[in-house]
Amino acid sequence: MTHSTQLPIIDIGAFSHDANQRAAIAQAVRNALSDCGFMYICGHGIDSALIARAVAEAQRFFATSPHDKQQLAYTDIDTNFGYQGIEVESLDPSNLPDLKEAFTMRNALAVGAHLRHWPTTEFRDVALAFYEAGLAAAHRIMTVLAACLELPSDFFRVRHQGENVTLRFLHYPANLSIKAGTQLGAGLGAEASLQGGSYGHGMASAQWGISDGDFSFYGAAEGVTDAGWRFHSQSNLARLYADAGWRFGNSEIHLVASGAATSLGVVGPTPLGLIQRNAKSIYTFPQTTRNTTGSLALNGKTRLDEHWQIEAAAYMRSLRLRRRD
Image (tube, rainbow, N blue to C red; front, side):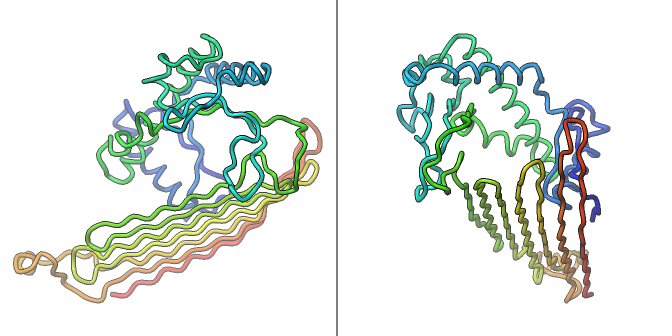
């Protein structure tokens, strides 16, 4: 368990061509996602000059007149391509529409060149180049994650292609009139998933976030259970993360809480004779390992001027290991 208050920075650039570093990079990613759940990635392959060109083209497009932008309007969800104006989308149906505009490009490499909804040729060329570079970087990261989980290298890549991939240029105009205190640049977002499989395998996860004025909150929870294919080999995992932040003037403060609990069933070797009688056999019982960990951190920063900034952090962590054998 790491005791650092800083997120790890991992360079994945050598993963695809240096077998000697591949295992070390995969282990570093595994440690980062197991210890704190987050990390910074460098060596992703997206050129900084291309990023700057994409930002410039997006700014140039959003600066054009509302009439010109509306000529390229998003028409239907099946195409999922084109311009969406301010207060057109609402991620929270119960709230007012979002104060943002967007240009959406789904499956752009396959269909983008054939669509007439491009602002300019230069915009199209830069957007497609950025789309391709971003997708390649995402696939590179997915390959690393597959290695961490000892899965085939293309396990995630084949599931994230074509219509499952979208690039969006977003613009949040300044000085817009807010109709109510709850109207947001982008409404609160939420996501939940539920999966199940053989041998009693199940997984549930959810995340929720909101940004309202000077306050923001993000929370995520995940639970995994697996009955195992051997007797008395039930395993469970639960994780929770929450971050509440406040901003006032040149300062901001965050209260971050996280926790995890694991329970691992029988994992020891079984004599061959028992396995030949029943493949589910175990040699000893009970044999369980239970771990619980939690942390609470308070960190803040204030900017004194354009050159100086003060940061401070206080945290506490707990770790409990229990083994029954």
